[in-house]
Image (cartoon, protein in one colour):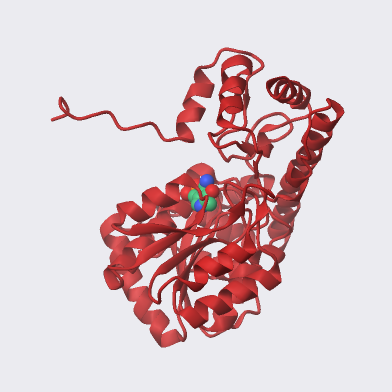
Length: 397
Ligand code: PMP
């Protein structure tokens, strides 16, 4: 069967992790895959997660299947986190939520649902975007198109270009938007800009699909949701794919959610019925553990407080590394203004390093950066920052 089949290319980001693992240089640094690392270079299990797991271990009585859409407490806690406790989206019941295996699973389930009812739509993705967006939506059978987003010259948001592109998207097409901590650029919209984009969506009649993989990694859980709130205020249908991989450190528990927001609860119930049929034929029902951990934490005031503290600890460390990188390059006399690195948000920065420099860093210094120059700031620590700054300075000489 495979004799005449060409080997598929390795995943551009996960393939880099493989190469990193096989590198024997003790000074190697992985600035590739989007996983948080602490000051010791480890991806820790949060203390609130450990505490919730202890509770679950004692309480657990069965490993029987969850409902198709997952634990109901999980769905309700997800909605409160996405929209805010007092949101009318939650109280009116016009949003429906299913636990999906990670943000990726949520994107794929949402894509399947859209394909059923909107088979001829195009999916508009930001230029640039997370590589897997293209994979997920093409695999669901959609044709892709790009809208302007990042201005490489100013290393900031090309808002005028974005508005111009989104004003041309035909009604019924799907627009995939990163709600915060844009991957790979780290460049986000502010609240007023989100309101503007949501109004364009309403006027033009395209379908917003919000990818919310980093809630709390930008400014805070509340302010990071301003894009979601802006679309909720318009009353139009939209989709949200969310993930607890990063903000709860639950990467391998595949804990995400697909939320469909309809104009009213009756439409929401119809959406939910189809969400169930989509899930049933893909993975039948979700894995339990991660969802139960998240629901246990969010439904308990003390554990939730602990989570928020741990989350801001992760963000503060990343912000500190952003400043350390900018200062480290400046103190080595590297030409150019790198201050944009401190205004970008989330785990990533588009460093502006060329593919040649990225290759040089990997071949000569065992520093792994994704092609295109995306750096995961969480891979930097006080122990490796000088090595990384020295290496970049040398590469740019
Ligand atoms: N969307 C974006 C923009 C992401 O960066 C990621 C993770 N890298 C995901 C979705 C998927 O998250 P998960 O690991 O939960 O599938």
